[in-house]
Each structure stands twice: as structure tokens, then as C-alpha cells.
Image (cartoon, rainbow, N blue to C red):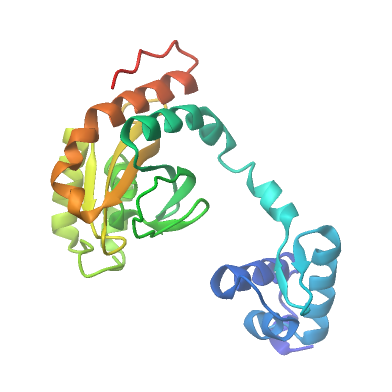
Length: 258
């Protein structure tokens, strides 16, 4: 046994296997898993075998491993309430705009995309359902950050602000001003900050559990060439957000008008 293996718990070894797929997947051999996790091959073989038998990993004809369907099934329970509640209204939003629409929540320092309906336009894709992006680089993320408590915003802006593209806003002073404007106006717009060729707009979805309490954000993404007219979507985005809030709080929704 390696010296650094003695202090590792069973849970940390299991998590290391899943993290290997998160950063280097989607398909890995046993030797790659052992190397990426720092586990002895014999330990990796035992853990991978148990995960495969349970359904957490699957194995292809070449003997390489992928994340199994059982983990996907479990993952569907994450943010299920927001996703199931919002899905009919996201479909309305898609029908009214024809654009790719999505729902995101804050998970740590990132925006986690819990649902998405894709439009027919070939828009450069920065994330997917279950994907994460830094809060400061996306419209949904900026909305979530703008409505967070001041201490969280300040701590976030004091940390590393990674640039995903040359257009990503990473100046903390300028970002603080931008977040204040988002909170004042009720929506955020980004242009090619997460992916070149795409722009996005988003609004908050309130939880109804306190002043400025925001549970999620909904937004749409389209071609960067459409950025000058993005603000025209604010009324329908806001209307859909209010309907989601009403559904979450079990209130009769207001009628939605195009």
C-alpha cells in the first residue's frame, strides 16, 4: 500500500474515481483510473469492480469504463423540484421565443444548469444539463450572484475571476457595478463571455422566502449577432419567472401573454 493510501477513507477513494471521470472522462481504462486517482491498481480494480456491479460504472467492449446509468438516475433527483416545476414554463418560453432556454441554480461558486430546451439555431454551446460555469461569466450566473447576500458577493469578487473568453468580465470593481445594475433592473445580459459567438439574457426566479430571495435563474441564449435586441425578451422572461414562482409557492399563476 502506498504511504498516502493509509490515510484515505473508502469514501474519498470512491469520490476520486468519480472525479477522474469528471475531469478526464467520459471513457477511461482501469490503468488510467488508477493513475488519475493515485490508487494502487489492485485497489482501483476492486473499487471499479464494485461500482460496475452496482451500476455506477458501465464497461464497453474494449474494457473501458464510463459513468453508469444508475448514477444518472440518482442524479435526476438533484434539483428535481425546481426542474419539474419549471419545465412546463420553460416550454412556454421556448415556444414564445424559439431560442434555447435554460434553468440554473447556484452551486458553490458556479451556475449549475438543471434543465435546458434547445432551439434550432446552431448557437455555440458553453454548457449542458448538469454542466457548470463560473457565476461571473454567464447571464444566469450574474443574476444569481447579483441577488446573493453582500458578504457572498464580496467574497466571490475577491477570489479568482477566470476568463473563459477574451470578452469575460474579470475586473472586480467593474463587476460589482454591473451586479448592482442587474439587481436594480432585474435582468442580466452577457455577450460572448462564456463562449465566442453566443450571447445570453437571464432573470431571477424568487423563492418567496425573504427579501430578494432568489432560488434560480432562467435565461435564453442565442447568436451573438442578436445581442443588440436581446432586451426585447425581458417581458416574457419576467412573466415566465413569475409563473414559476407562483407554482413553487402554490399560488394561482398570472396569465402569460406574448
